[in-house]
Length: 164
Image 1 (cartoon, rainbow, N blue to C red):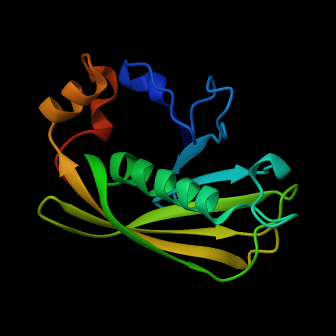
Image 2 (cartoon, rainbow, N blue to C red):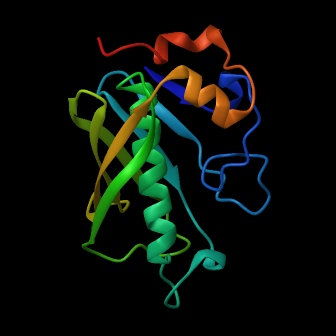
């Protein structure tokens, strides 16, 4: 089963560049938690508004998509609010504008408050285009609440609990 992940579930407003559907200047990519594969996934197709080299998605935009997928993985898979502390990427093949690609992210390991993640962008044939790894620093509910400027909706606390 795939569960749609979106900021409204948490009880605060967001203007996330990558995932927020109301951000008219953003990418508006919907992310999902795939229970069967224990991954966070999304599909996207970007116009040349987001190009770097002609016909190719800018590398920085790819990094933003990968980071967002891994951040959602810390929530949906590791059940923690977390902030990126370190990341790296390898650009293996081009990501073309006007072509539907997918991104998938998973948890590699958890060591105390450090959550290691991995993500990749795939073309329609399943060819890996970009691979990223990142370490996230888990933050507590009090810090998360302070950052969002309000209370976090407890209706979805199943995603936000200590590691199973």
